Length: 175
Length: 182
Image (tube, rainbow over all chains, first blue to last red; front, side, top):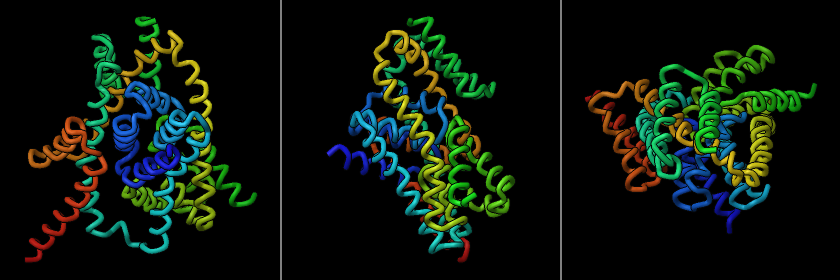
């Protein structure tokens, strides 16, 4: 049943989504695109673009969008969004109840250190998986990629502006 | 004003006006919670941020739950989390309904053809920024590389990679401390 699957997948994403929004994207992509095929790679990329341009955390945005497109209805959005935040509730609240000295624990520190290294690779894999023929239709795609990378990394241009510029370029070239 | 309503409104406002993901929300939450409403001290807030970053899940939601709990227990945390999530939920729902019917439009498709490579670039940039921040050495450099290759080429779930890394870091630390003692 699709709602149960949505709940299960987004609960898992919420539970293992260490390392911020981009790392979570990699998990979402693996489940939603590669495993369940609820979205194609291009649809997923479009959602990331939309998430960057709209308010709120990318995890909520993707859960809401994927829930809607997988079921064609609001209930799917509700289930996926609820599922992605539920682990946060369970973990934060139990932390508040049981542990007050969590942060200064050496074991926690070492575990986080291991995660921090791997998260870099997790995000890299998301980028690599999205570098496919569907997202890069021709050489112009690679030029847009290179320019966008340069503008974001070295000129610190705001991501929204980069997306808008790329959209204008796409509209002119492919339109 | 009722404290529940005030907390909901604060987080709803932050959720509505921060574009660009969860990290962009943190300074706004801090300003609202520490400076404007004086619900928490700066030290308390910094502790909450550190804790929230060590937990899985959406950072802004974790922070909202912590702040809500400190204000009014479990019910407080429900209110603040709802306030944070609701604006994105509503906006994305509207876009999803709208976009589903426009995505086959030729101009929309052309615009997104241009946007997609740029989005991939936006995902690639933090890889390099994080690598720099982590001060990778020739000894640790292979860890993110292997992780990326496993997920990318072998199709291993990132969840397994994360689990192994967490357990690995934990065991490595234990070993180090044992060596240190001896």
